Length: 96
Image (cartoon, rainbow, N blue to C red; front, side, top):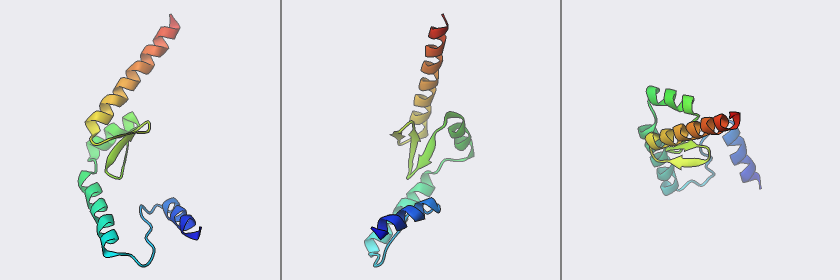
């Protein structure tokens, strides 16, 4: 029970991982690989600006929009724009 609370507190404090002793070498390698992958795939400044405009998040190496996961920003952005257009169309159809 305490371990779950420790993980929650670590997450609230901004930590991405919470490891408990003893940590195996394979677990440590896996965590480090994930961090390296995330850094290598992290969006640049222009991508972050687009993501802010379209309310797209990036976590664990994937892009997130409205609960859906995308491997690349292009797909997430296309879906976000499609949703924006359909929302506008729906609003305009109610006005007439």
